[in-house]
Image 1 (cartoon, rainbow, N blue to C red):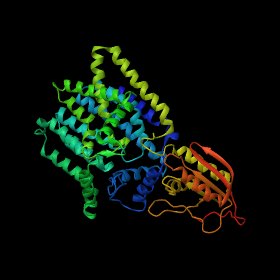
Image 2: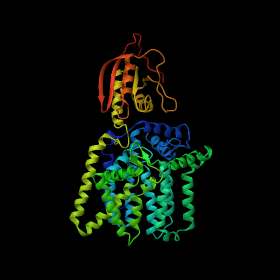
Image 3: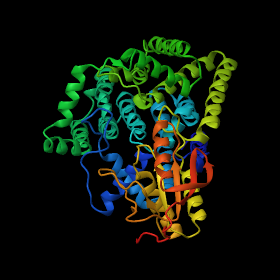
Image 4: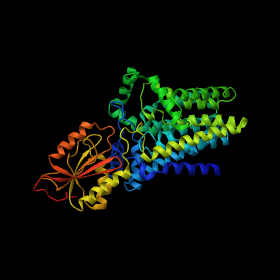
Length: 511
């Protein structure tokens, strides 16, 4: 392997793991996935339908859970092990983008692309995000590695299978990425002269890979009367042109495209970002008069337009996987400038480095940004400190927790952490005052009669939690206890309280 690429890969791993302990986010989705993914292997609770998508009646695929379950088993249930896996999986993109850019252009452009991917603020955020969209970045890479092999390799056999693998896994990870069928189709149209050089066995293998990877979708659709197909078709017919009071699908697209530039290249305003992107597209179009590769990069950069065709969706990860295409475009531009004006290209590269490192150092210690997670600051390190504080203050006695959580009154996050960490370290569990809500994974013991003498009110980070719910919970808890002390750990608030019940007890729940 290229020595420079090894150094770039090491840099990328370092930046992704720089704030590992304090930036690992563990909210409701992560706790739900931890429960369900492990149950697949431990309880043989096999799944055909994955996590719910944002549109009612639609679900993502289950591949994310099957992969995550193996990671948790190897990591003995530790969320930190899962976080490390996602960071290393994202770092794998450094090697893949190098291979794509090298194949399409040359080794130097491949190394520049790998370096920009390694230091990308956007990619470090995806590396910390243990959600199903994150792994789709590798799926995009697989598609364009396949198309680059079809265009430039003598042996084109693996091109179509890699593209099929990319499209199929992307749809498994994130349902709306069914639009990658269009991206792959446009890319193949650009290299149609090469398709006749591909063997029939390559076509057949690609078909088999696609069918196998998407097999759970086919089975679940047959079992549930093609619910996803019907729901998706109706959503497309509805159009979904307007989001909120004013934003249209076009305004959302351009806002997200500008943000892509902001989080990968330079933190310029929306107008300037879009102007530079337009300039890059024009630059690639000029270069494409002599070669096909720049056209493929344009398809990659503007792949979000196909998502736009089926409706508007205002989420950070609507452009997941598009960023690497932009990075390759910038790399081609930098390489071209370097050949004519070395100081200018070095200056631009330094600005890109400073921009990304500044965002990484400023934002990554806090975990995922609010554009990815409404409820920020649900970091594993603060959660562990909170659990330790409650157990240590209880001093071996039983205690009860009333939690103000998001989703409201759902104990999934704390059920997982208290069992994985609290019970293993302190040998008992607390009671959870508000009980278990049906349909949500994770249970904690409920009070049966009376109250423990030691009680806590625990408030999660308040982003996304209406203030009136906090007040309602405090009013309710004041009927049971009085406040003794209050601590703040990160963005978590914990009140130690003393029960008002004269017959309170210190009996821990039976395990």
